[in-house]
Each structure stands twice: as C-alpha cells, then as structure tokens.
Image 1 (cartoon, rainbow, N blue to C red):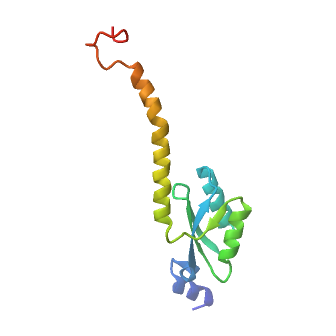
Image 2 (cartoon, rainbow, N blue to C red):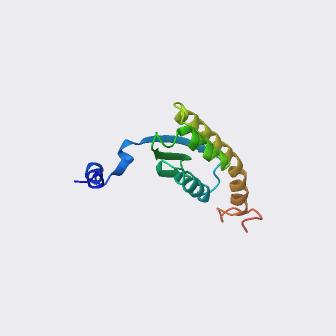
Image 3 (spheres, rainbow, N blue to C red):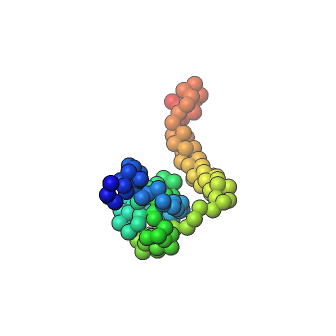
Length: 135
C-alpha cells in the first residue's frame, strides 16, 4: 500500500479537519446578510481555515481551522481588516443582551403608543353617542 492510499484510509471522508480547532466570535458592525457573506468569503480564503459560518441574526461566527496553519489572531485581524469588530463571546452576555432588548422594547412602546392613540382618536368606536365626531 502506498502513502497516498494509506492517507485516504486513515482520514476517511473526514480529512485533516479532524485535527482542527474551532473559534466562536461575536461580530459587531454587520448591517445586512451581505456583510455576513463577505466575512465568510474572506475568512474562508485564509490558509488553514476549513469552515466558516457567520450568522447575521445572532451576530456570531463559528470558524474551524488548522492551528498549525492559521491562528485565531490572524482570523480576528482579517475580520477587523474588513471593517468589523470581532471578540470572544462574553460569559455574562445573555443578561446584558436581555437588558438591552428590554430597553429597546420600552423605547419602542413609548414611541408607538402616541401614534396608536392618534390613530384610535380618529376612528370612532361608538356610534351611539351624540358627539359631533360620531354623527
């Protein structure tokens, strides 16, 4: 058995990715799904990077890479070169994110209620009263 055949048998269909490391990052600065695709494409072209998955909705990235060829610092630098910020996910991130979402909801509700009041004010719910608006 030659070297190439042995290598195919030992790796199977998985390939050298079996000896890879993964990196989870929080990405800041994405404004659309095209930004996520741009990051996936650019990081995926780095030598030693096997897989890249960027989620615009979750603002996260997962990268599988060979530690002997690519480094986490180089991957983060490449993302920063594209104009985005990359950092490891925080441990207390869910609490902070929940607080931020509650604040956004409160501000949205406070800005929406006057509009709803104005809209309801012009719509007559009752036709039985004798006011000028209803008749």
